[in-house]
Amino acid sequence: MTIEVIGLDGDDTLWRNEDYFAVSQDMFHELVAPYANGDVDLDERLSQTERANLELFGYGIKGFTLSMIETAIEVTAGRIPTSGIQALLERGKEMLHHPVELLDGVGEAVAELAASHRLVLITKGDLIHQEQKVARSGLAELFDHVEIVAEKDEGTYQRILERHGISAAGFVMAGNSVRSDVLPVLAIGGRAVHIPYERTWEHEHAEHDGSVPTLASLGELPAWVAANG
Amino acid sequence: MTIEVIGLDGDDTLWRNEDYFAVSQDMFHELVAPYANGDVDLDERLSQTERANLELFGYGIKGFTLSMIETAIEVTAGRIPTSGIQALLERGKEMLHHPVELLDGVGEAVAELAASHRLVLITKGDLIHQEQKVARSGLAELFDHVEIVAEKDEGTYQRILERHGISAAGFVMAGNSVRSDVLPVLAIGGRAVHIPYERTWEHEHAEHDGSVPTLASLGELPAWVAANG
Image: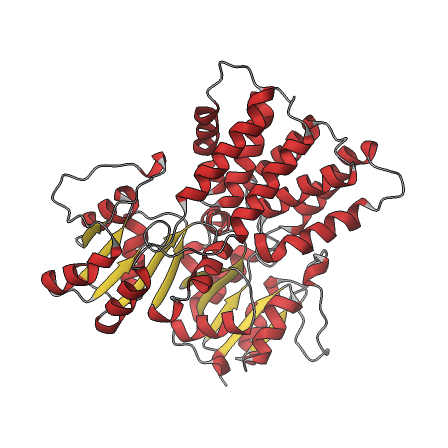
């Protein structure tokens, strides 16, 4: 069936995201290691806290910052000085303030797609921060709809398609996360294109069966759509 | 004009909210005061931090928790022990886990309104937490739409009305905040009903000119709608 509407993911599909978390994780390491026992795997402990808090905090930088602080106190048995906690807080704010850096070719590709198709941006995380990123991206007016959601599962995609009167058969979603952008869309009868990013948060890791079209960058999507629409 | 659609606010209109912040603020006071100079106004300092962080964090408990931690470190010049910070973090999680307590008469009133009108819940704060509160409230299926927004200003209301094909003249919004639920709705040509809650966060404080219908509780809304629709 003809592609009627194209859904695009935000973080690490349109703009850089996971890289900033990686920088924060390195900083966390440096701040915490001097006060922790040498045999503690700091990355693993932070990751455990994040997973444990995910249902309560959801995705996004505020929850990540709270998880960094929680882990820093726990793994050091409270020995980390408050200046270290202050530094983690500041890093969280720095992440929230960070300018949006579009990935290579994104501006041109989104403009080209918008000229021929209805576009929906479907992104998850903190509402206010995602809104700010959309605004800072300069791409907002190219999208027919912007949907900021707490989780990208089958129910979420179904609600979005219903709300905008989009048929699953005419919908294709493109994004970097197999777990969030590919599998749930296939499950509800839509199509998906995987555009891997070099770095993926382990929580987002999933595999598809190899039959999902995989592109090297968003810049290749207009040609794929033209050939497959 | 006939009332076609009724918008309802969530926090402190349908369910208790500000009371939990007040409890947290007392706890903040107790935890921080022993390490702060006696002449510091702790409530005022916390409030200043919240205001300064509002644009970056938005509304909600995660941002409030980060602001409590930031203020606790600042006003004690870092003397607060990490156990105190841990206690603030735990309090934040307790707030997020808190069961939803509907205000008196809300269940019946919303059911009665839903029987005669399209209802839209319009609430602001953290996406995931507001979604959880809506789910825990048991009221979700009574609403035609649930809109979780980062800010309740004229633009927000305009977008919501457009999205659902609601005319401003046929829309009435009911809520406890003059700033968020009343003034912007009047400004775009809708009607508003003020249902004050006993406790209002100072940031939400605003006055209307006295011409706005004011009810003692949501329980009075169905009768008001019947008389004014």
